[in-house]
Length: 147
View: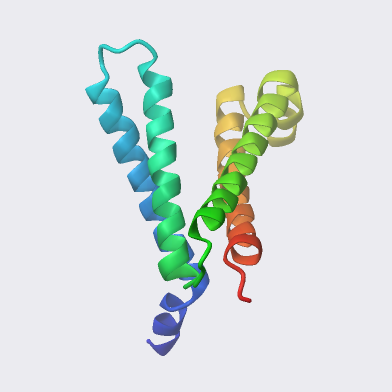
C-alpha cells in the first residue's frame, strides 16, 4: 500500500493523470463546439482549433501548478515555450503520419503484417506514446525546469 501511495505522489503519475484530463478537456471542447457549430462552414477545423487551444491552456496550467510545481515570474513566456513545444511535436506527428501513412504505407504494413487501417491504428498509438514522452521531457527540462 505504501508503494502505491508513493507512486501516486510522483511527478510522472501526476503528469499521466493530468494528461488524461487534458485529453478529456480536448474531446469535450472539440465535440461541444462541433455540435454548436453544426451549420457553420469549416466547423471541423474550427472545433479542432478550439479543442487544441483549450487543452493546451489547461495542460499548461495543470503542469505548471500541480505536476512540476513551477514558480516563475515569466508566465507568458513559459506559456509560449510550452505551446511551441506542443506545436512542434504535433507537426512531427503529422509528418510521421504523412510519411508512413500516405507516402510509404507498405513499410509499416510489411513490418506489422496488418491491413492499412490496422497498421495506422497501431502507428497512431505509437505516435501518441512518443508524443506523451517527448512532451513530458520537453516540459520537465525546458519549460518547467528547476532553477
